[in-house]
Image (cartoon, rainbow, N blue to C red; front, side, top):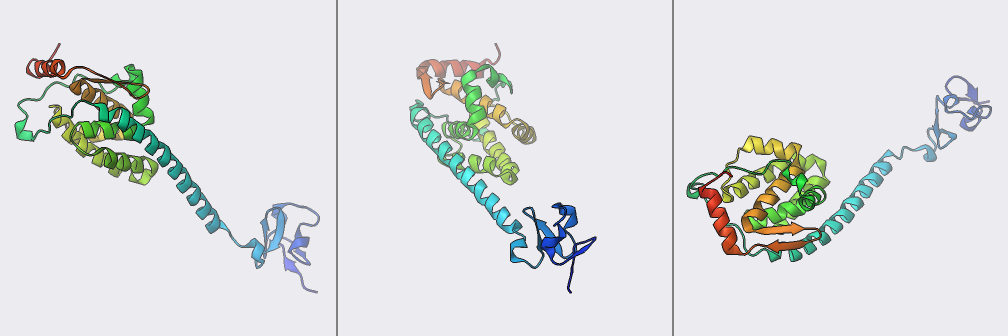
Length: 240
């Protein structure tokens, strides 16, 4: 008679290894425990399906990202049409040598927390708000920014790369706002507190243009002459 090695005992076949005790520890040797059954390792039903499990997890993540992308895309479309396109103008693009003097940055990193609408937008839709800031700030187009920021948040391995790109573009935005910037400082702020920095930049851009954004997608614009006079006064005479 032939017997199979169950690990610490023998039986007629792998199914018999756990005949007395239906426990995994009694299924060993040339047998393997799978789905509450003791099977021979050569049994096709005992084949390792880890590759199938990995593929299933990957496809599940792809579906989740696709659904999130569709939701973000729909909101971005509505936000652009009702908010960004309603801005009366965009910032003037300056070269470094054209900036006559840097103004003091009055907005603190956590000031956006005091504005409920800005805080909500920056926390839940940072890619869309960043796209608004960069388009109005004459730095980058709305949709390219949306896509790059969303991909960075959807795929964590790309997060640092996206933060680098965002930091580089933010420096251009600050230059157009006449705000002095430091690459390393801005990089660590974006890396550690991305939504707060997005919210702060949004408040600075809105203030420069003379716009106030409220939930949901409502824009109140201050007449341009008043905004221009106020901004000129702040640049020439910084401080309270």
